[in-house]
Image (cartoon, rainbow, N blue to C red; front, side, top):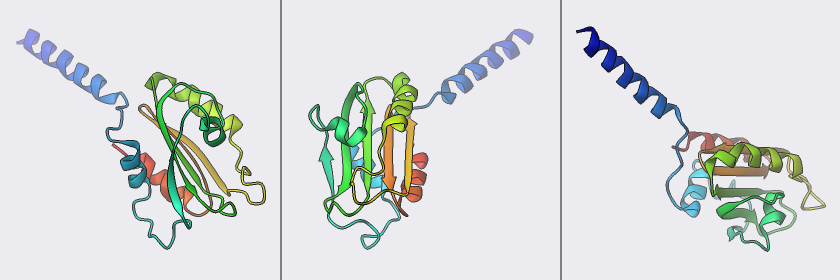
Length: 150
């Protein structure tokens, strides 16, 4: 009987430890980006908001760091006078997320629009995703939506 209880305890511990690791978020980056704007009406969003696919030529302009990534997109207002940028990065390896967050936090420039500045800047990670949010009143809601992703 003690052996059975011991084996069940070991099995339970394995399940708990396996479940505690942070899982990668499934789905395409445009779909995930859409989830980040959940609960934000079209009237609240910046004018002419559009997703931009990031590549080796434009990545550092939007993400402010040189990191290894699989794919990335940025959601930006197409008017230069609106300080709003949400950059979503899927890393090659989730174990790099802590360092990537640190690098982006150190280099992010909430005044990249020159004549305006984002009031809020957040850099967060979840699994293999890293997000950089630079915006005004929308930033806390987008941050909250990112934290809710599963």
